[in-house]
Length: 252
Image 1: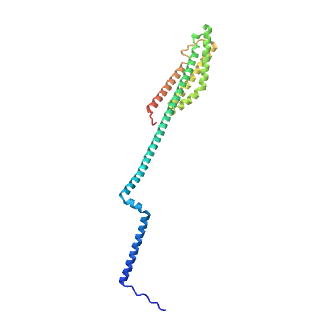
Image 2: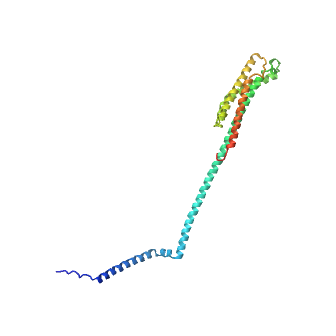
Image 3: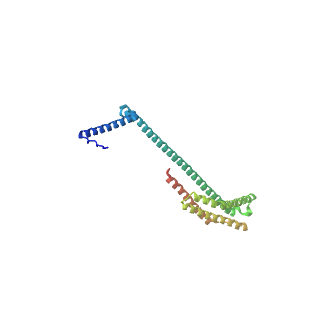
């Protein structure tokens, strides 16, 4: 059985087929658009309308405004918290600094009390070797006075030996970075120890023969050396106090 090929299309027929294909594509696109409009058309129409655009602007503006306000409030809270921490740290620093100054003042007071008691007890011990305390002329109450002076000196010696190193360490701690103060203290300590030893030696000599001494000359060199070093120590401590107040600032 023979099959015959269809006759070729004319030019006009080909144009008709092309037109039909074009119209078919147009219909497909329109159908797709209608389907999209059906699913989301209200939102699109809302955006296209003037009222809808204004509504969207208000909503978006409200959201952005809320975010901006939240951010500002967060920054303010963070800044207030940082300022509160800084204030607290500053207050704690001031409290610590005041405590430091108070303890340093207590140390200086203790140093001067120890020096004063030790030097005074030594001077009193030397005094009772003079003619005004001559053994053959003393009434009973004067002997009691001499005994009290000797006892006071012995107490002062024990206290000086037990506290000098401790107070020296505290003085060094509260005057860190000031070697002049530490050096002055060491010199004062050495000279006072020498003065106390001299007083003890003179009393021991007097206790042997009970011959009155010229107390204006006894241990005068040791006492002058002690007083000179004590003056240097006082100057060093005074300079330190002025230095602290001069350079003190809240930042420091």
